[in-house]
Amino acid sequence: MKKILSHLTFYVFIAIIAAIALGVFFPDTAVSMKFLGTYFVDLIKIFIVPIIFFTIVLGISSMGDLKKVGRIGIKSIIYFELITTLSLLIGMGVALILKPGNINKQLLPVAAAAKATTASKSFNWLSFLQSNTTIQALLLAIIAGIVINKNKNRINIIHQLGKLSHYVFIALKYVMYLAPVGAFGGMAFSVGKFGLATLLPLAKLVACVYGASALFVFIVLGSILKYYNLSIWKYLVAIKEELLLVLGTSSSEAALPTLMSKLEKMGCSKTVVGLVIPTGYSFNLDGTSIYLSMAVIFIAQLYQVHLSFEHLLMLILILMLTSKGAAGVTGSGFIVLTTTLTAIHTIPVEGLAFLLGVDKFMSEARAITNLIGNGVATIVIAKSEKEYVNPAT
Image 1: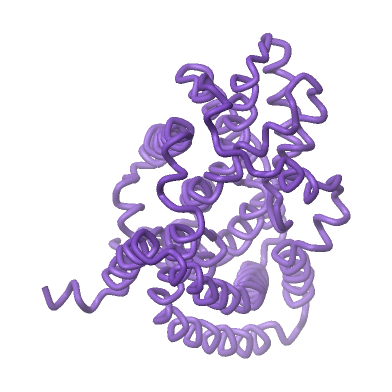
Image 2: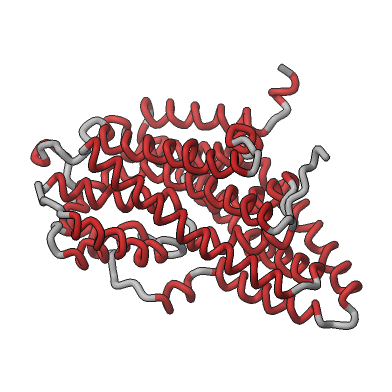
């Protein structure tokens, strides 16, 4: 019992339970708790850029072999494309089989369709790169790492940067003690604002999203880890604190810094962690891909729009491109969905309005799956590059 009480995970779990109770019985008070979750996530975001920068710079400058850095980058991009495409297919397959959209839309609570589409301005890569500080930090760190690698005072520079990185992680350790507070604020707001009752009309859709995500994690990612003689269960247990934090805040970014630290402790090299995780947070959004393909099929079923094999193939090809812009942009999910539906033409864009009421409850599934997927990607790349050392050995 004493051991349980000393774990941060226990307090985050208790905070989430308390937040759900507050949201159900005192929704107005729960909604006012939003600032706790928002401030905590904002505080964590302060650490993202320096941690990415220090991790990548130290990894590249210490490695010496710049060709290996390039190889890791190419492997990562190929892996991301293969896995996200598979996640799109799983989301689509589950929706086609279970048909969550086969319900009477007249019975559903509809938010203003304008709300779903007005924020959905056209997406372009320049805006994506300008707004995505993770990618910016990644590119800057790669350049700095290469420059330091060629510097004659490389050892001294690495030593000084290592000390600074150490202090950043110490500061993060103390900030993480506030995780229960952040998880409480985020979950209380979600339940208080939208109410568990809003789940009932679209319960099948929510269940399908969570079911498809679980299928992807345990079957697809589990099989990948098993190929490398690793257990998906042991991996999930190792990142349980991060999973609960994401569940409470609905933000996978909240767990990014500590996930990087955990992966290094698991045995992944600093270079691989530094290159794969930041890139993955922008280009390897497995949970988001599952949701996007399922949401499009759901709206088509809701309006009884028949999708031929050619339509489905076009949908996958479009989502392979548009889903890459689902990070770093506010309201990105609806931006991507609007872009996709507009390109297809046959599915009414106003159908997005039906998703607004329950979108918040599905965001946890997306964020948790994204987090798990990026961790697995890091382990896979580290294993393939022989940059993984089992801590037990």
